View (cartoon, rainbow, N blue to C red):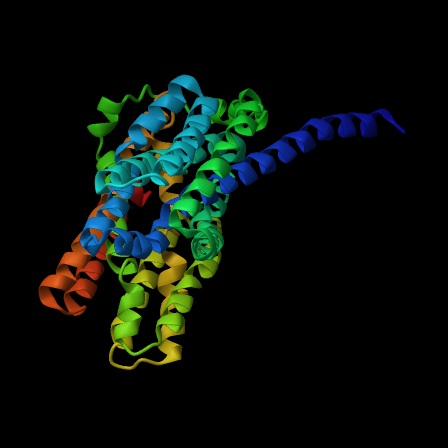
Length: 416
């Protein structure tokens, strides 16, 4: 074997180890996102048995779900700051601890405020600690220009969490009741704390050497602070994109099953059809990220918004022509685009505001998503209750989709 071959093999070995570690980090972020998002969404299964046991109004119980989204959004800057100052071990282990404690407390809850504190505030904060903000920063150190694709995989965890944990929750509730299910969730999540603490976070946090070096060579830390970022137009453009898009998506998604039932579909078919959005979501995420590499970020994002608008129009038509063709078209278009822009918008924010305060800045931008999700689901319910019609709700969603895409049409930093 000649010297040239030996040198090539020696150079390839570290790169292979690095790639293996990068894939492990990606799988870990995906698993933690499945856990966090899935556990957050399970409350939709617990809502009915809890309201029946305590005789609470539906609006009172839904407040727990809204608080979880609100807490997830408002605590995002704190999550980013902890990541900047203390690293990934402190962030992820705190999230696991908080989620486990929340479910252990909830299994003994007797008052609404106890559910609001545990399943609302604590689960929302815990999900944020193992969610998109730390995942985006960590994966950025391993995947560099491939970050949008990596983030697409992680963002699709929302669909995976729903597909896995919602049916599991229902099966467990049928067998051991909602209190027993919360107890099992608390014990299972708490058991993950020690393995998470023992992971080699120092190695994970260091990133891939060739990615970190390329960033150091090509990107100069411009000394961004939260205050300087807030004064930049790109900050508010990204914030508003997160906010209005979340308002549009969650104003509809919280009521889609009820809408389909009112349109004439049997309840099981309506729930099953919307459940398939978790499947098409992954393809939408990867498809938009693939377009990013082919035609550029701005055109890819604008195409995704256009597909969302088509999906909303199909949903509006379903009430007049309740066919399975329209239903399939709606699920494929609207369902595949929920969150599809998230990886590209996150990658854009990370590119613009890269530096020592990236976590804090990106976390603050992410407040827009949490606020939009909470406001969208709440205001959508108010619109329907006030008008007793879905027409204003659909118009409201369409307006917010347009507002969400507007920054990519007019803001200079996002048009490039």
